[in-house]
Structure formats: C-alpha cells, structure tokens
Length: 321
Length: 255
Image 1 (cartoon, rainbow over the protein chains, first blue to last red):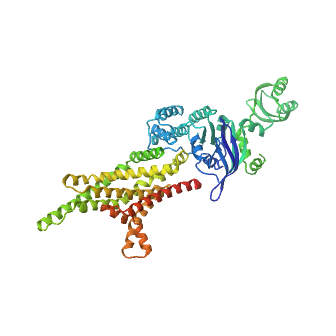
Image 2 (spheres, one colour):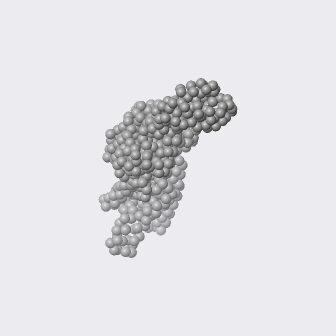
C-alpha cells in the first residue's frame, strides 16, 4: 500500500531524512518510531504530498507522490502534529468543510460527519466552537477530519499527544479498530504505544533507518535468550540457590537480584532458544524451597529502542540491516 | 470550480465570524457618509451661490459628486486592501491549517482563487454599503447611472488587482502584521508612482507612472473605459495570483 525507496529530504543545511526504505502492506498498522527530530514528521509530510522529497521515491496505493499527487491525496487522511483546525468554526461545520474539500459527494457528507463524530467521540460537541474545545477534543476532531472521507491510508503524526490517560487508551482502541480496513502509519516517541497498537515498527534515528520489523520479531531478535525471574519464599541461602539452579539444563547464568520480605529474587538466563521455566520450577520445588513467583521478564521495546538509537551502535545496526 | 467555491465560502464565513468584517464595513460606512455629506454640502452651496450671483453655471451631479466619491474610494480603499488580505495565508500558516489545504485533493490554484474571490466579495460588500449614499442622488436628482456603473466596475478591477498582490504577500509570511504592513506599503507605492510623471519624462519615469494604479483608475471615474486600463488591472491581477501560486509551490520545497 505504501512504498518508500531511498527517500531523502535535504533542507538548506541539514539532511532531515536520509535514504529510508520501507513498505507497508494493506491493512497493517505501522508504528513510526524515533526520538524527537529524527525525521518522522518530514517523512509523513512527504507521504501526504505536503512536500516533495529531494531524492528517492514514495508511492501510496501505487500512485507516486510526486507525479500523481492528486490521486495520492484522495486516498490519504492526514492528522498533522498540530491538528489543522479553524478555531472560528463549529465542529460540525468544520467537518462539513473538510468533507467538501476532500471532494466527497455533497449528499453523503452530513451522514458521514455524524458517523465519524460518533466514532471519534466528538458528537457531543458538534455545535461548539473549536476555539472553546479542550486539547483532547481538538485532537479527536483532528482524527475525525483524517477519517472523514474514509481513506485507504491514514497518516497520524503523534495522534495521542496531549491526551489524558483515559483518552489515550480510547484513541489507541480506536486506531486498533481501524486497522485491517485502513492502512495506518502512526508516529510516536512513546514506546508502549507502539507495543500496544502496532503490528509492525519502523525505527528511525537522525534521519536514518535503524530497524524495521514486526514488534514480536524485533523483541525476540534482539534478545535470543529468555530471562526468567524467580522469587523464592522464606529464608534461603542465595549461594545454594545459585548453585542448584545453574545445574539445570539450559540455564546459562543465575544472578541473585534482591532479598525482600524474607524472600529471595533471582534472575535466570537461558541459552538461546531454550525454554527452562518448567525445569527451573521443578528444581526449586525439589529442593524444598517455596516457589512464590516465576515469570518471564520480557524485554521491552524501550530497551531495544535505546539500544538501537544509541549513538554509534545504532548506526552500525542500521547499516547491517 | 466546486473547490474554489468551497474555499471561498469558508473564507467569507471566517471574515464574518470575527468582528473584522463588520468593523471594516462600519468604518467605511461612517467615512463615506461623511464624504458624501461634505461633497453634497459643497455642491448645494455652489448651486446657491451661482443662483445668487445670477449666472447659472452647469451643475453636473456626476462630475461634482459621483466622481470625487469614486476617487476617494479608490484612494481610501488602499487601506482596506491589506486589512482584507493579510490573514488569507498568513493565518493558515500560523495555525497549521495550511497542511490540511495542501494535502487535500485540491489544486493550489483552487485555494488561491477561492481566497482571492472571498476577499474581492468582502471589498465589494464594503463598496456596496458606501454606495448606499448614491441612492439619495437618484431619489432627489437624476444622475446618469452609466458613468457610475463604469466607475464601480473600475473600482472592482482595481481592487481585484491589489487584492491579488496582497494575497501573494500573505503567502510569504506567518505573521499577519508583516503581511498587512508590506501590502499597505506596496499599495501606497503603486499609488504614488504617478507623481514621478509630473516632472520627469524619461522612459523610466513614464514606466513608473504607468504602473500607478490611480492613473489607470481615473478614466473609469469619469465613465471612460479604456482597454489599456482594463488590461493593466487584469494583468496585475494575474501577476499577483500567479506569484501566489509560485510562492505556495516554493513553500512546499522549503517548508
């Protein structure tokens, strides 16, 4: 649905985006991740035909953003970083204007405005002036605007910025529900957001592509081995526990983490590709210790992200990819 | 066509959503009410004087009332132009709504023409309110309507040209005050360029004088249509709008 090849954007002095390639399949939700100033907005602006690339190609639904921009614009809904709202308009009036601007048939506009207002939870303010709305409402009116003409592709630049936790949750649900039917690219620098909403992630840093993969793959690719955290009840000798668990087949390392409330927490690392949870549990129980808790300490996207975007290291990984 | 109208309608609504449009119209209604009262007062006094002295002189309503009124509007209207155009693009840029316009399936020309048309309509409405004064002339006298119609058409042509220039200037900045200030300076210069023609006859002076808006409007105020003047206004309009379109395009490259 979206294809980006060697995309480069140079401003007067600096290069905002450097040779980025990625592809997005129809119906996918892609998280576009990077620190502030990484080139996310620039890439999105190129995809939405707001500005042309300096080099490289980008196409949406098979139409080139440079040469067939009209066709691309018809198929894209875009929510920029600051929602493009006219403060002097009422919500319903604004959405009607956007409908006309997007070239929707006049007869369809009123019903579609109503439908989208309800979906984005702004129906209760449809007669209010936009200038009187709170930040959360404005953001959602912006989202409604992007959805209005039922575009194939949605480009959302930080859709949850400025929302309160409850609204963030609702917006993420909404975005998730839009996947499948629409192809969605959303940018963010909030990692849990990507983990929760996206299937696929593209990470850029300083204008360069650092990683592109599914969220699940990326997590497992960076940490082949699994880490299990084990909490043992009662007074036990850390040394003994260590010695006992290291003997379990497939365990590569055991570290005593902390003692708390008369219990002991150890972290057990396994050899790549081995699941040692059952064996560890059995060993603990057989030794007569009370197994209080056993859980996989999953590697968060946050750690991966920090690892990938760390100065020199990040660049290396980007090249390897 | 539909896109142009969509933009135009939105612009007109924006003008009337704030007090700007009402304030402008009220100001001009007061100013031109005063002008009219003053000019008619002079006309009446001149008429009485002529009668008392026993040598009736020709009293032409068109020449003595309509024409000076139109000339006044042509000049005082120069203040109106920047007030109307300064927000057209500067505000969209500041608010970020320009991103909506430029990523919607409308051509840059649709946006520019829609905005320019809305500006022209607002100017026309202000002019219409000021023209209510002429109603008294038709009520109590019999002025010739043709020179008046031609004069009004000339004012609209002049406004179209200057509004196009103002539209272009508004695309250059995010700051409305800058857009308004520069537009006013350009309008004023386009007016006073005529002065050079008064003492200098070299080619550059004649070119400068030719560029003057007022020189091209004056024949209209007398009810004379010269194609040369009409062409001047139409080409200045096209130049302004064309520059605005190019400016929007470079905005994409620079943004």
